[in-house]
Image 1 (cartoon, rainbow, N blue to C red):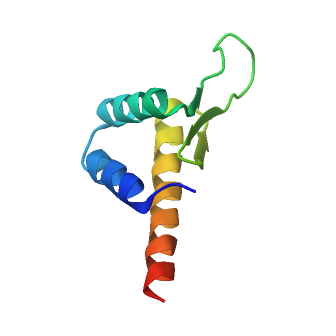
Image 2 (cartoon, rainbow, N blue to C red):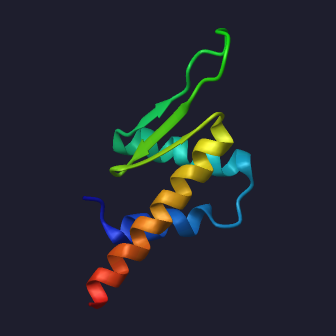
Image 3 (cartoon, rainbow, N blue to C red):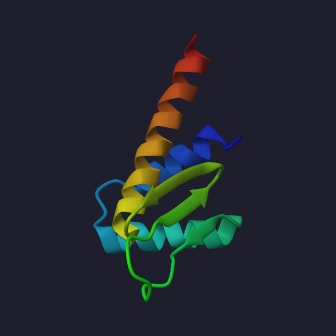
Length: 88
């Protein structure tokens, strides 16, 4: 299970960044932590899915920016649940 402090710091760092900066920040975090950043080759027909898995939280999307947004939303939801559980 990821650490709430780690996720909170990462979400704070992502806050207010544009798509390029947010993607670079997450990509670096993936490299540093051994996560997954899976981008399918763009040569095939039809839709493809980008996957980001970092600190046991996964985001998917049809492109990089959508996957970053998906991961950020999933991480925010997870963090809110952990904070609520700690307060209970």
